[in-house]
Length: 334
Ligand SMILES: NC(=O)c1ccc[n+]([C@@H]2O[C@H](COP(=O)([O-])OP(=O)(O)OC[C@H]3O[C@@H](n4cnc5c(N)ncnc54)[C@H](O)[C@@H]3O)[C@@H](O)[C@H]2O)c1
Image (cartoon, rainbow, N blue to C red; front, side, top):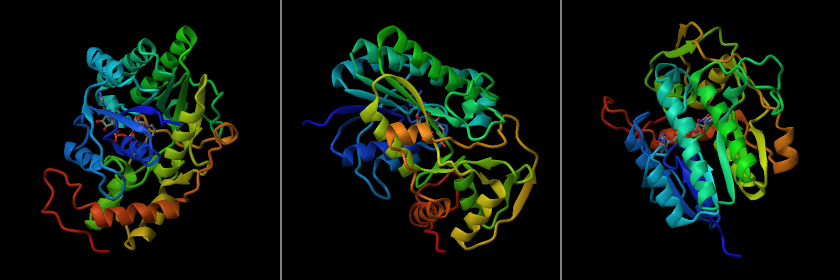
Protein backbone atom coordinates (compact mmCIF):
# COMPACT_ATOMS: atom_id res chain seq x y z
CA UNK A 1 0.00 0.00 0.00
CA UNK A 2 1.35 3.47 -0.91
CA UNK A 3 2.54 5.40 2.14
CA UNK A 4 0.68 8.54 2.93
CA UNK A 5 1.59 12.20 2.61
CA UNK A 6 1.97 14.01 5.93
CA UNK A 7 2.29 17.77 6.33
CA UNK A 8 4.40 18.66 9.40
CA UNK A 9 4.32 22.25 10.67
CA UNK A 10 7.22 23.46 12.81
CA UNK A 11 9.36 20.86 11.02
CA UNK A 12 12.62 22.74 11.54
CA UNK A 13 12.24 22.88 15.32
CA UNK A 14 13.28 20.40 17.99
CA UNK A 15 10.33 17.97 18.03
CA UNK A 16 9.24 18.75 14.44
CA UNK A 17 12.62 17.80 12.96
CA UNK A 18 12.71 14.49 14.87
CA UNK A 19 9.20 13.52 13.83
CA UNK A 20 9.84 14.56 10.20
CA UNK A 21 12.87 12.32 10.03
CA UNK A 22 10.92 9.45 11.60
CA UNK A 23 8.24 9.83 8.92
CA UNK A 24 10.87 9.78 6.16
CA UNK A 25 12.55 6.72 7.69
CA UNK A 26 9.18 4.95 7.68
CA UNK A 27 8.55 5.78 4.02
CA UNK A 28 5.97 8.56 4.31
CA UNK A 29 5.97 11.42 1.83
CA UNK A 30 6.84 14.50 3.89
CA UNK A 31 5.68 18.06 3.31
CA UNK A 32 7.53 20.22 5.83
CA UNK A 33 6.69 23.79 6.83
CA UNK A 34 8.31 26.28 9.22
CA UNK A 35 8.75 30.04 9.41
CA UNK A 36 12.23 29.76 11.04
CA UNK A 37 11.11 32.31 13.62
CA UNK A 38 13.63 34.17 15.75
CA UNK A 39 12.62 32.55 19.06
CA UNK A 40 16.05 30.98 18.81
CA UNK A 41 18.77 30.93 16.15
CA UNK A 42 17.68 30.27 12.59
CA UNK A 43 21.06 28.60 12.00
CA UNK A 44 20.12 25.91 14.57
CA UNK A 45 16.94 25.11 12.68
CA UNK A 46 18.91 24.92 9.44
CA UNK A 47 21.22 22.38 11.11
CA UNK A 48 18.19 20.41 12.34
CA UNK A 49 16.81 19.94 8.82
CA UNK A 50 20.22 18.99 7.46
CA UNK A 51 20.06 15.82 9.54
CA UNK A 52 22.96 16.77 11.82
CA UNK A 53 23.49 13.91 14.24
CA UNK A 54 21.40 11.36 12.33
CA UNK A 55 18.30 11.19 10.16
CA UNK A 56 17.64 12.16 6.58
CA UNK A 57 17.95 15.77 5.44
CA UNK A 58 14.77 17.37 4.11
CA UNK A 59 13.46 20.54 2.49
CA UNK A 60 11.21 22.96 4.34
CA UNK A 61 8.66 25.41 2.89
CA UNK A 62 9.24 28.71 4.63
CA UNK A 63 5.67 29.66 5.49
CA UNK A 64 4.01 31.21 8.53
CA UNK A 65 1.02 29.31 9.94
CA UNK A 66 -0.87 32.58 10.34
CA UNK A 67 -0.58 33.24 6.58
CA UNK A 68 -3.94 31.81 5.49
CA UNK A 69 -3.51 32.14 1.69
CA UNK A 70 -0.01 30.56 1.76
CA UNK A 71 -1.25 27.66 3.93
CA UNK A 72 -4.24 27.18 1.65
CA UNK A 73 -1.96 27.06 -1.43
CA UNK A 74 0.40 24.55 0.18
CA UNK A 75 -2.39 22.22 1.33
CA UNK A 76 -4.26 22.45 -1.99
CA UNK A 77 -1.13 21.64 -4.03
CA UNK A 78 0.36 18.91 -1.81
CA UNK A 79 -2.93 17.23 -0.75
CA UNK A 80 -1.71 15.70 2.53
CA UNK A 81 -3.58 12.77 4.07
CA UNK A 82 -2.74 14.10 7.54
CA UNK A 83 -1.42 17.24 9.24
CA UNK A 84 0.90 17.13 12.25
CA UNK A 85 0.55 20.63 13.62
CA UNK A 86 3.70 20.93 15.74
CA UNK A 87 4.49 24.59 14.99
CA UNK A 88 3.91 26.97 17.81
CA UNK A 89 5.42 29.57 20.06
CA UNK A 90 6.72 27.52 22.99
CA UNK A 91 7.90 28.64 26.43
CA UNK A 92 6.07 29.88 29.49
CA UNK A 93 8.18 32.87 30.50
CA UNK A 94 8.48 34.52 27.06
CA UNK A 95 4.71 34.19 26.64
CA UNK A 96 4.27 36.58 29.57
CA UNK A 97 6.34 39.14 27.63
CA UNK A 98 4.52 38.63 24.31
CA UNK A 99 1.01 37.36 25.09
CA UNK A 100 -0.63 38.69 21.91
CA UNK A 101 1.97 37.10 19.64
CA UNK A 102 1.55 33.74 21.42
CA UNK A 103 -2.21 33.97 20.97
CA UNK A 104 -1.76 34.85 17.30
CA UNK A 105 0.53 31.95 16.43
CA UNK A 106 -0.92 29.29 18.73
CA UNK A 107 -4.62 30.08 18.30
CA UNK A 108 -4.99 31.88 14.96
CA UNK A 109 -2.24 29.74 13.36
CA UNK A 110 -3.95 26.54 14.56
CA UNK A 111 -7.27 27.80 13.20
CA UNK A 112 -5.69 28.50 9.79
CA UNK A 113 -4.33 24.94 9.69
CA UNK A 114 -7.72 23.46 10.68
CA UNK A 115 -9.50 25.59 8.10
CA UNK A 116 -7.18 24.42 5.31
CA UNK A 117 -7.54 20.81 6.52
CA UNK A 118 -11.32 20.93 6.23
CA UNK A 119 -11.34 22.79 2.92
CA UNK A 120 -8.96 20.31 1.30
CA UNK A 121 -10.39 17.18 2.91
CA UNK A 122 -7.38 16.22 5.02
CA UNK A 123 -8.44 13.09 6.91
CA UNK A 124 -6.52 13.43 10.20
CA UNK A 125 -5.12 16.27 12.28
CA UNK A 126 -2.70 16.01 15.22
CA UNK A 127 -2.23 19.03 17.48
CA UNK A 128 0.86 19.53 19.69
CA UNK A 129 -0.58 20.60 23.03
CA UNK A 130 1.17 20.81 26.37
CA UNK A 131 1.13 19.61 29.96
CA UNK A 132 1.01 23.30 30.92
CA UNK A 133 -2.77 23.27 30.31
CA UNK A 134 -3.11 21.54 33.72
CA UNK A 135 -1.85 24.67 35.51
CA UNK A 136 -1.26 24.12 39.22
CA UNK A 137 -3.66 21.19 39.47
CA UNK A 138 -3.18 19.47 42.82
CA UNK A 139 -4.37 15.99 41.80
CA UNK A 140 -1.38 13.98 40.59
CA UNK A 141 -0.99 12.34 38.11
CA UNK A 142 -2.79 14.58 35.61
CA UNK A 143 -5.61 12.84 33.77
CA UNK A 144 -7.00 13.96 30.43
CA UNK A 145 -10.55 14.20 31.85
CA UNK A 146 -9.61 16.77 34.52
CA UNK A 147 -11.30 20.15 34.02
CA UNK A 148 -8.53 22.41 32.76
CA UNK A 149 -9.89 25.91 32.97
CA UNK A 150 -7.17 27.61 35.05
CA UNK A 151 -4.06 27.98 32.87
CA UNK A 152 -1.44 30.10 34.65
CA UNK A 153 0.45 31.55 31.66
CA UNK A 154 -0.53 32.97 28.26
CA UNK A 155 1.31 30.00 26.69
CA UNK A 156 -0.83 27.51 28.63
CA UNK A 157 -4.00 29.43 27.81
CA UNK A 158 -3.09 29.52 24.10
CA UNK A 159 -2.53 25.74 24.03
CA UNK A 160 -5.85 25.09 25.77
CA UNK A 161 -7.53 27.44 23.31
CA UNK A 162 -5.90 25.44 20.50
CA UNK A 163 -7.43 22.23 21.89
CA UNK A 164 -10.84 23.88 22.09
CA UNK A 165 -10.82 25.14 18.51
CA UNK A 166 -9.73 21.64 17.42
CA UNK A 167 -12.86 20.28 19.14
CA UNK A 168 -14.99 22.79 17.26
CA UNK A 169 -13.65 21.52 13.91
CA UNK A 170 -14.48 17.93 14.93
CA UNK A 171 -17.97 19.01 16.00
CA UNK A 172 -18.74 21.10 12.91
CA UNK A 173 -16.95 19.17 10.15
CA UNK A 174 -16.10 15.76 11.64
CA UNK A 175 -12.38 16.41 11.16
CA UNK A 176 -10.73 13.76 13.38
CA UNK A 177 -8.25 15.50 15.73
CA UNK A 178 -5.99 14.06 18.41
CA UNK A 179 -4.53 16.66 20.82
CA UNK A 180 -1.30 15.41 22.37
CA UNK A 181 -0.22 16.98 25.65
CA UNK A 182 3.57 16.72 25.67
CA UNK A 183 5.37 16.66 29.03
CA UNK A 184 8.85 18.36 29.15
CA UNK A 185 10.40 16.82 26.06
CA UNK A 186 14.20 16.57 25.81
CA UNK A 187 16.86 14.96 23.64
CA UNK A 188 19.34 15.90 20.90
CA UNK A 189 18.64 19.34 19.32
CA UNK A 190 16.74 20.43 22.43
CA UNK A 191 15.66 24.07 22.41
CA UNK A 192 18.37 26.28 23.94
CA UNK A 193 15.94 27.91 26.40
CA UNK A 194 15.12 24.61 28.10
CA UNK A 195 16.88 23.68 31.33
CA UNK A 196 18.71 20.54 30.26
CA UNK A 197 20.30 22.27 27.28
CA UNK A 198 21.04 25.52 29.10
CA UNK A 199 22.51 23.73 32.13
CA UNK A 200 24.71 21.43 30.02
CA UNK A 201 26.18 24.39 28.15
CA UNK A 202 26.83 26.36 31.37
CA UNK A 203 28.30 23.43 33.32
CA UNK A 204 30.73 22.74 30.46
CA UNK A 205 31.68 26.43 30.43
CA UNK A 206 32.24 26.34 34.23
CA UNK A 207 29.49 28.94 34.67
CA UNK A 208 26.75 28.93 37.35
CA UNK A 209 23.35 27.56 36.36
CA UNK A 210 20.17 29.55 37.17
CA UNK A 211 18.36 27.44 39.76
CA UNK A 212 14.78 28.60 40.34
CA UNK A 213 13.06 27.88 43.66
CA UNK A 214 14.22 25.37 46.29
CA UNK A 215 14.80 22.49 43.85
CA UNK A 216 11.56 20.73 44.74
CA UNK A 217 9.63 21.68 41.61
CA UNK A 218 9.28 18.53 39.52
CA UNK A 219 8.90 17.74 35.83
CA UNK A 220 7.86 14.59 34.02
CA UNK A 221 10.79 14.56 31.55
CA UNK A 222 10.04 12.64 28.36
CA UNK A 223 12.63 11.61 25.78
CA UNK A 224 11.98 12.84 22.25
CA UNK A 225 12.04 9.33 20.67
CA UNK A 226 9.25 8.26 23.03
CA UNK A 227 7.27 11.36 22.02
CA UNK A 228 7.79 10.48 18.33
CA UNK A 229 6.49 6.94 19.02
CA UNK A 230 3.37 8.51 20.53
CA UNK A 231 2.91 10.95 17.64
CA UNK A 232 3.18 8.19 15.02
CA UNK A 233 0.78 5.95 16.92
CA UNK A 234 -1.66 8.85 17.11
CA UNK A 235 -1.28 9.47 13.38
CA UNK A 236 -2.25 5.86 12.62
CA UNK A 237 -5.25 5.81 14.94
CA UNK A 238 -6.72 9.31 14.67
CA UNK A 239 -10.44 8.74 14.02
CA UNK A 240 -12.30 11.24 16.27
CA UNK A 241 -11.61 14.06 18.77
CA UNK A 242 -9.48 12.81 21.65
CA UNK A 243 -6.86 14.18 24.05
CA UNK A 244 -3.82 12.16 25.16
CA UNK A 245 -1.03 12.81 27.64
CA UNK A 246 2.37 11.90 26.25
CA UNK A 247 4.63 11.88 29.29
CA UNK A 248 6.72 9.49 31.30
CA UNK A 249 4.67 9.13 34.51
CA UNK A 250 7.85 9.75 36.57
CA UNK A 251 8.20 13.30 37.93
CA UNK A 252 11.80 14.23 38.75
CA UNK A 253 12.67 17.08 41.11
CA UNK A 254 14.85 19.89 39.76
CA UNK A 255 17.60 19.01 42.27
CA UNK A 256 17.48 15.35 41.14
CA UNK A 257 17.63 16.33 37.48
CA UNK A 258 20.71 18.49 38.14
CA UNK A 259 22.37 15.60 40.02
CA UNK A 260 21.65 13.22 37.09
CA UNK A 261 23.02 15.77 34.63
CA UNK A 262 26.20 16.24 36.71
CA UNK A 263 26.64 12.46 36.55
CA UNK A 264 26.09 12.35 32.76
CA UNK A 265 28.53 15.22 32.18
CA UNK A 266 31.03 14.14 34.82
CA UNK A 267 31.33 17.62 36.34
CA UNK A 268 29.64 19.39 39.26
CA UNK A 269 27.23 22.28 38.70
CA UNK A 270 27.53 25.64 40.46
CA UNK A 271 24.05 26.86 41.43
CA UNK A 272 22.90 30.47 41.02
CA UNK A 273 19.81 30.35 43.24
CA UNK A 274 16.81 32.44 42.16
CA UNK A 275 13.16 32.73 43.27
CA UNK A 276 10.42 30.76 41.49
CA UNK A 277 9.35 32.40 38.23
CA UNK A 278 5.78 33.59 37.61
CA UNK A 279 3.88 31.19 35.36
CA UNK A 280 5.96 28.15 36.36
CA UNK A 281 3.94 25.23 37.70
CA UNK A 282 5.11 23.24 40.73
CA UNK A 283 4.87 19.73 39.33
CA UNK A 284 3.91 17.92 36.19
CA UNK A 285 3.12 14.22 36.09
CA UNK A 286 1.26 12.46 33.30
CA UNK A 287 -1.26 9.72 33.79
CA UNK A 288 -0.45 7.79 30.63
CA UNK A 289 -2.97 4.98 31.00
CA UNK A 290 -5.20 6.32 28.20
CA UNK A 291 -2.28 6.61 25.78
CA UNK A 292 -1.05 3.16 26.85
CA UNK A 293 -4.46 1.54 26.30
CA UNK A 294 -5.45 3.32 23.09
CA UNK A 295 -2.13 4.20 21.41
CA UNK A 296 -0.01 1.39 22.85
CA UNK A 297 2.26 4.18 24.11
CA UNK A 298 5.09 2.88 26.31
CA UNK A 299 7.91 5.35 27.02
CA UNK A 300 11.16 3.42 27.11
CA UNK A 301 14.01 5.84 27.81
CA UNK A 302 14.93 6.51 31.45
CA UNK A 303 16.14 9.97 32.47
CA UNK A 304 19.70 8.65 33.01
CA UNK A 305 19.79 7.08 29.54
CA UNK A 306 18.18 10.13 27.91
CA UNK A 307 20.62 12.54 29.57
CA UNK A 308 23.53 10.34 28.52
CA UNK A 309 22.31 10.51 24.91
CA UNK A 310 21.78 14.27 25.12
CA UNK A 311 25.24 14.89 26.58
CA UNK A 312 26.83 12.66 23.90
CA UNK A 313 25.01 14.64 21.21
CA UNK A 314 26.13 17.91 22.79
CA UNK A 315 29.76 16.75 22.94
CA UNK A 316 29.68 15.91 19.25
CA UNK A 317 27.54 18.65 17.77
CA UNK A 318 27.13 21.35 20.45
CA UNK A 319 29.97 23.35 18.88
CA UNK A 320 27.88 23.76 15.70
CA UNK A 321 24.86 25.05 17.61
CA UNK A 322 26.26 28.43 18.58
CA UNK A 323 24.80 31.73 19.73
CA UNK A 324 25.87 34.92 17.91
CA UNK A 325 28.14 36.10 20.78
CA UNK A 326 29.76 32.68 21.40
CA UNK A 327 33.51 32.17 21.42
CA UNK A 328 34.91 30.42 18.30
CA UNK A 329 33.54 26.92 17.85
CA UNK A 330 35.48 24.12 19.47
CA UNK A 331 34.36 20.56 19.96
CA UNK A 332 33.61 19.75 23.60
CA UNK A 333 35.96 17.23 25.13
CA UNK A 334 34.58 15.46 28.18
N1 LIG B 1 9.57 20.85 24.01
C1 LIG B 1 8.64 20.60 24.94
O1 LIG B 1 8.95 20.16 26.04
C2 LIG B 1 7.19 20.83 24.65
C3 LIG B 1 6.26 20.53 25.66
C4 LIG B 1 4.91 20.74 25.42
C5 LIG B 1 4.48 21.19 24.19
N2 LIG B 1 5.40 21.48 23.22
C6 LIG B 1 4.90 21.98 21.93
O2 LIG B 1 5.49 21.21 20.90
C7 LIG B 1 5.71 22.03 19.76
C8 LIG B 1 7.17 21.94 19.34
O3 LIG B 1 7.99 22.39 20.42
P1 LIG B 1 9.58 22.42 20.32
O4 LIG B 1 10.09 22.25 21.70
O5 LIG B 1 10.02 21.52 19.23
O6 LIG B 1 9.80 23.95 19.93
P2 LIG B 1 10.61 24.62 18.71
O7 LIG B 1 10.56 26.09 18.97
O8 LIG B 1 11.94 23.97 18.58
O9 LIG B 1 9.73 24.23 17.47
C9 LIG B 1 8.61 25.01 17.03
C10 LIG B 1 8.81 25.32 15.57
O10 LIG B 1 7.67 26.06 15.13
C11 LIG B 1 8.13 27.08 14.27
N3 LIG B 1 7.18 28.19 14.30
C12 LIG B 1 6.95 29.09 15.31
N4 LIG B 1 6.04 29.98 14.92
C13 LIG B 1 5.67 29.65 13.65
C14 LIG B 1 4.78 30.22 12.72
N5 LIG B 1 4.08 31.33 13.00
N6 LIG B 1 4.66 29.63 11.51
C15 LIG B 1 5.38 28.53 11.19
N7 LIG B 1 6.26 27.94 12.04
C16 LIG B 1 6.39 28.51 13.26
C17 LIG B 1 9.48 27.51 14.85
O11 LIG B 1 10.31 28.16 13.88
C18 LIG B 1 10.05 26.18 15.32
O12 LIG B 1 10.89 25.60 14.35
C19 LIG B 1 5.27 23.44 20.15
O13 LIG B 1 3.95 23.65 19.67
C20 LIG B 1 5.30 23.41 21.66
O14 LIG B 1 4.39 24.34 22.22
C21 LIG B 1 6.74 21.31 23.42
